[in-house]
Image (cartoon, rainbow, N blue to C red; front, side, top):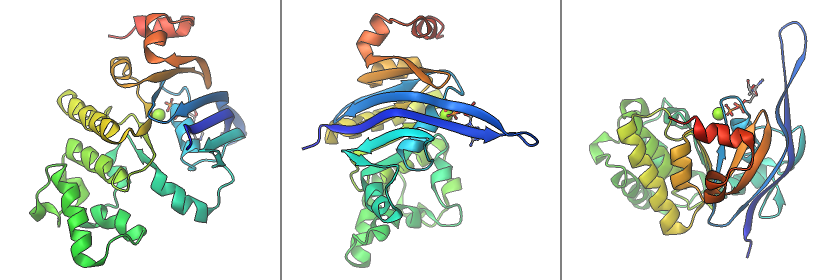
Length: 257
Ligand SMILES: Nc1ncnc2c1ncn2[C@@H]1O[C@H](COP(=O)(O)OP(=O)(O)O)[C@@H](O)[C@H]1O
Ligand SMILES: [Mg+2]
C-alpha cells in the first residue's frame, strides 16, 4: 500500500529561447514536495512562476533538466512509452482549455469512447455504448448530441466532459491546471463541485493549480507557494493561509481581491 502518491525532488527545468542568441530561462529551480494519498495539493503563485512547467514534468509531457519525479516510487522521468501506456490510466489531467483535450475532427461519441477503446475494456458495441451513455449522463449531454463535435459544447459542458472522461478509468492521481480560469464565475462553482464530488467519492488524489486563492483555500488540503521557479513556503492549507511564514505568501494573501 503506497501512501505517497507523488514525490518530486530537486526538480528543475531550464528552457532555451531566443532567435539569435540562446537564452536560458530557469522556469523551475530545485523544487521538492510530496503528495500523499487523498491529498488535494494546491500549487499557487503568480503568472509565469513555473506551475505549468512542474505539472508537465509530472505528467511526462516535458523532460526535467534535473531532479526526479516518483509516482508510487516509480521514476516517471525514465519511464518508457510502454510504461506510460499503463501509467496514463493512473495519472490523468484536466487543462485550462477543455477543447484542447478533444480531437476537433472526431465527434463527442468518439471522445467519450476513447478511454475504453485505448485500453480494450469494452466487450462489444453495447458495452462501449453503456460506458459512453453513463459518461454523458453525468454531464447533462443528451444522446442525440453525441454526433456533434466538441466545439459545439459550451465551455462549462466541455470542461465537465473533459473531467468526467479523465476520471472514467478511475485514475489514482488527477492533475488539474487552472481548470476553472477560462469559465464564467457561475460555471466555475459547478466545476469545483464536480471535482469535489469525485474527490469525496473515490478519495482521489489531486494536484491542483490555480491562481484563485479563495478556491485553493476552500478546496485544497495542502498548498505550496511558488515564486520565480522556487517554492517559498508549503504546508497544510489552513496553516499557510492562517499563519503565512514567508513575506511573498503574505503579499499574495493580502493582495487578493
Ligand atoms: N516551452 C517553453 N519555452 C520557453 N520558455 C517557456 C516554455 N514554457 C514556459 N516557459 C517560460 O517558463 C516560465 C514558467 O512558465 P509556466 O510554467 O507556464 O508558468 P505558470 O504556469 O506558473 O504561469 C515563464 O517564464 C515562461 O515564459
Ligand atoms: Mg500555467
